[in-house]
Image (cartoon, rainbow, N blue to C red):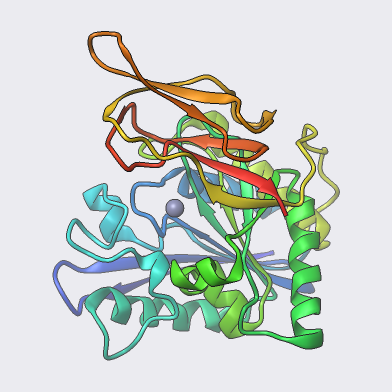
Length: 319
Ligand SMILES: [Zn+2]
């Protein structure tokens, strides 16, 4: 087993950004897995989880190479912001970057070279959703592929997603997927530009390093590494509602007010069920949010005071 650590500096605009990379190489060759975390600067559970994984893998990695980027967005981490600094762009919508684009896009192009240099055979990008969510993986749409190549990468992604033991959500339908720029997410670009199976894992709350979510994320990654033959078999996850599910936005509110969720994440519901209520500070119920379709509650909004037009949850419906 060999462990290498690299820290490289990007200092083209504003304060310096130091990108850390840790590579663990087993003596036996095998898959090359890349683990990315904290592309959204306020989502730190993945960072904690990969640091935990580095320690675990030092004694358990049997085959292959695992390259870890503990923070893809050190500027956002420092400034506690989702994007690339307070006024920056969402890095997860500008992959693979552009050398002549915005600062965020130029930075991403620089990061992209480093991800590519790891010659990944699989990529996991670790995110966090909200304080009240089930762990889930998002399977990208291979929109740039067709025919056999599309079938092959879809099957590879389905197998890895299944190995996580988390709820598996397929991303928005193809038209919305492209319209929302999701083919330019880190995982979306790996799938669509590199033809490498990649998944986004959403686990734990934003803005804090919740130890239980950190361990759960690490265990989820270990199950994928076991599936790929890099580590020994891992304990199975607790059963979850079998899909296939498609990610969709939950109901949007008309009034601002306090969100009172009524359905637990991980629970399936039927059409017309009241999912949540919005209350005024007087206590008056301003709105009841009913399910427009049967589905699965995935995550409640990370905020308690909801603004008009805001979606209150991530939900899923059957593919
Ligand atoms: Zn995120």
